[in-house]
Structures are given as C-alpha cells and as structure tokens.
Length: 364
Image (tube, rainbow, N blue to C red; front, side):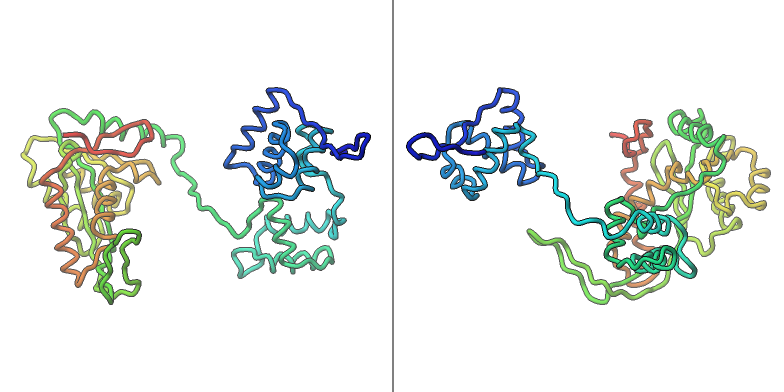
C-alpha cells in the first residue's frame, strides 16, 4: 500500500521516514557513478519522499512517471531498503536440463576434434547434439558459457620455466652483479637483435593535429633485414654495436675479439648473456677457455629480460623502428648507427631496482 484515503476522499501519499544511517547509505547510492541507473533513481525517489516532496513533484524532477514514484515510495515504506530491490520472478522454465549444461561445459573444457584448435559455439552445439541427443543452438551455448564465465575461444600463453631450483639464485646473482659490479673490471651486457626489417611506406604519412593522431600508411615495401649485435657497458651506459650477417658462434666470438682488442690487457671482463645457441656453443666455450680474463654470467633460462642490453633494444625500437620509414637496408643501418652514436654522447647507466618499478637511467 503506497497511499491511503482518509475521510473526505483525498488521496494522501504514504509517509516515508528513515534513520540517519539509512539516509547516508541512500545518499551515497544516489551520488554513485558506478551503481546501476535504476538503483540511483530509486534512492533519489525515496530521499525526495523523505524530504516531504509530493509524488508529482518528484516525478517531474527525476523524469519518471507518478506511478513509478508511488511504487518505490510504497515499497520502501513497507520493506525498507530491501524493498528497493527487484522482486524475484519465476521466469521461464529452463528448456535444457542439467545434462545439457554439463555437456556444454565438458566440450568447452576439452580439446576440440582435429584439425580444429579452438572451440566455436557452433562446434560445441554440434558436439552436445551428438552426446546427449539435445538440439541446442550456438547462441544458447554462448549464453550458457557467458553465465559460467567460460571462454573457450580465448587462449592465454604461458611458459613452463626450466631450471626451477636454481632460477631465483641465478636471477639474484645477475641483479647483485648489476648493483655491485666487480672492482677494477669491465661489466658488459651482450645480446643480438635479429631480423630488423627495412620497410618503406608506399605513401607518405600525415602528421598529428589537434584532436587527431598521426597517420601512417598500412602498405609497405620490404627492402631486406639487418641484424645487430650490441654490448652495453653497465657502468657507463655506453653501447658498442656491430651489424652482423649471421647470428652464430663464429660471428659472436669475432665480436668478442673486437671488444677484447679495445680493453687494456690485465683488465678482467665480465659479461651477462642469455642462453642463446651462439652463446653456449662448443666454439664459444672454447673461446672462453682461451681467454681466461673473460667471465660469462648467464641469465636463467626464459629470463633474458634480466639482460640489461634488452633495455637499449627496447628504446631503439620505440624511437627508431616502430614507426620508422627506411628506403633501403643501408638506410636502416645508417639510422641505427646514428641512434647509437647520439645515445652514447649522453650515455647514462641504468639504475637497477628491486621494487618492481620500471628500470630508469641514473640521474646526471
């Protein structure tokens, strides 16, 4: 009952009262930007009614009908805040029994029949029709899976980490090496960036304008690729690079020979490497044995991101490669060289941190 008729025949709206705690809760709901619109409107109706406004006035202010105001005013008066919730409905009886739902889940969580690699709603419907003899539409399969938050079409990649018992010890060793480099020694971080594409756009791009980002043509022409080998001096931040024709152990040790000739005799050299085949080949191991002043420190398997030179490659990709336009392979190499030369003029070491924050260059 949301209104009553006193002697004389005049209709009077049901009075709405509430305690201070209820009022504060409804005020928070009425001001919420995340609550459902219908919940916000109902809270505002009840608050306005508690302030003594008439139903017609509340309806005008909130752009709802008078009947809507009467409904929620009466519900609150009779049941409190619980009355502002939608009433339970019996709904349409389920067309599919539990066996069908179980069959749908069983199909979605299994491997699809070859040669398919991913389930579709239509394929699941066909699978269910063949197992429980129930015709179910692909759209109904989608609704059931959505209700269960089951998404067989989505795949998230992961990597099984090898060398688990030693992973954290080796990672800690690399981090300690960066934070406290060996005294009177050179510490290098070395790796390769291969198959860098030299591509030129078929049509010129358009620069950014207020309210519109820069535009770049999708079609491009390939002019070959280039591979880069780089050694980062961890203490100074300077980088030595070399364009390589092949990424193998012979090329890698030739690069080490070049570095070896640049560093004065008697100075120990430590280097951080990932577990690439050119770094662990027999030829490379033999080179290390013949050059005792060199000490290799390998990152854990699947943890090449611990190699600091990857930060240089990342900056290079963002600054030069991602949106770069290269008329030829030589043009690509020239721009790579120019970037490294300019970077070395203002080189700064990276500050290695343990707090999960992005790595940053040390302040000048």
